[in-house]
Image (cartoon, rainbow, N blue to C red):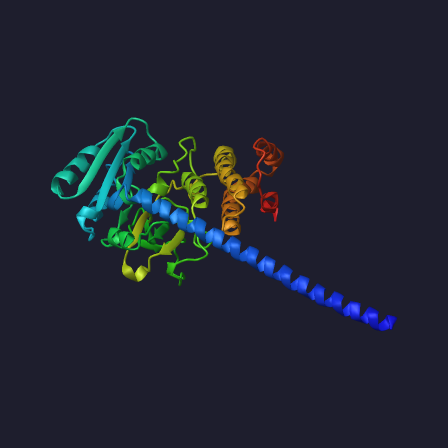
Length: 367
């Protein structure tokens, strides 16, 4: 009798236990669904916000071109701009001449007179520096989308047409990319978009995948309302592109779209002998300048960590950490040649009190 009662109660207990477990699972599933719905609503609100803001802009794309002493290298760019297939009513070109004056202004004036049907604006600032020039250009743009071109580079005929064709609110469009030998003019494969790249269209794992092209300023279009939300850091001597995009991207849940190279929308970059990757080793460039860039990335990292509900939180954490590792690579190169400066470098790092810094990556310089 007692045994049967115990079994009976035991059965009831197991019944209620199972029901409780089922209910707990249902609650967890509902919480996940609610969280998913919440994130989708945030994305829709973000897209709606950008759409609404973009209604204040004219249809088309604005291209900002900073130029410092461009007289000896800007002609190929001007020639490529004159051959664009996009309807001229759908784009504007903004030249920002900066610093010491040369004949660049006269070259652009002649270009404007030969192309009266193009929407071209030219302005000048005595203060030199690409960051200041880009910020001035950002303040002047009037179109839905914005892109940047450096004055020593040039673009394919369909570049603007395709860039605009695939542009959408809340989307970053990236073009194909080719390096040009400074001395011979030979076209070379770029590590930014190598020939081995098989995936085109929407890149779901960007900006982690293809982070190199995602984190350079040219060769892309971005919604203007997003561009205007972030300014280039005029205090940095170099690494300004990385600083800018690591602060911009985590603010928005962008979709990233890479144009198929078969569509012939290409950005041609002149490989300069004084590019950042070819700088001579120095404590200032490899250590001090890199730490200044890492400081900006950490600001973005701290801000992003506060937004725990961000749908792509882990993706952007990975992206930001990878960009920090990229800066540490330059520091490692210095320490390989100057191992005696290790303690000095560590003390320099400590001054910043970074939330994230990969010390293990730095230590690997002697492996």
